[in-house]
Image (cartoon, rainbow, N blue to C red; front, side, top):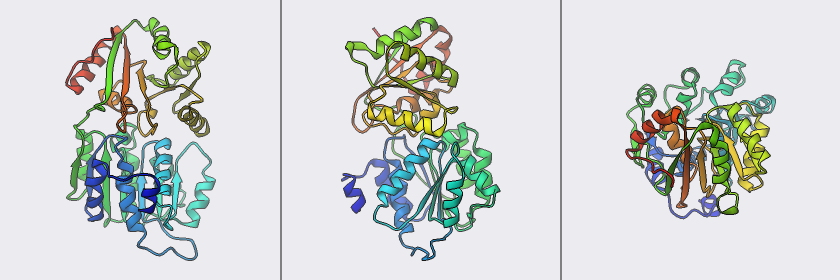
Length: 361
């Protein structure tokens, strides 16, 4: 509670108010909540409360009691930071496990022991196969952004990891959508779960203003520059492309136009991705061009502007993309540049939203 007060929080968000008592009860949980609703604290606070009840091993080596699986490195780092901040006055030790960096520091940390592991499935599997991680004492498993992990093809790794866990444990699953695949996964993992749905399913942020420009592909880059510099001032904007190469090409084009810009996608090293994100958060970079790897887990306060330079293949990813704006009571703007070839994707998105997206004047 001291850490919560230091962070300046006074009232729980709806997902926190619903999930914290459920997690403390020891029951399994299936929660549907968008990123940006405070869901990390919804499981971090009751987990820290539970872990705090055990005395640390004076030798410093102990097997982890909780495991949090997340889809991306960025989300893993943000979740681990939340645990550090909220657990600042406790003795719990957490370890961050993800790919794209040297495994040696992670192996050393695992050898020293910890209470909590926050991991992406692929790198955790690597450590398991090397015999470097003991999951036999896990009491709580958290699957965060479970739908994104399924989208990214982690289901086999998740199942292999779960086979190494004790049968008696608490399972917490958080997902932004409640698809057929998520229901099937929940049926295999969760036992008599409490279900929580704090927001309309697949609903974008209520404070986001949507608009569509119908444009030929060749006209998209100059139109984007005009949109980004409306009113003579460059807006801080997150711009989505479908491919890694497309993100690089667009970032280079915007740089040639004199805009401060960076790209973030799966081919970038972890160091480059972290630097680009920090530069964007600090305002040193005004435009961040990203693939859908950035659609989840990016916690950017008061981001005013999201642009879909290309529409996503999967309609639900539109919701995840624009979920970066219109958060924490702040208004936001979501602009989509739609070519003739993307009309079917636009119609699928509008069916998901249950309404038409207005055309820009």
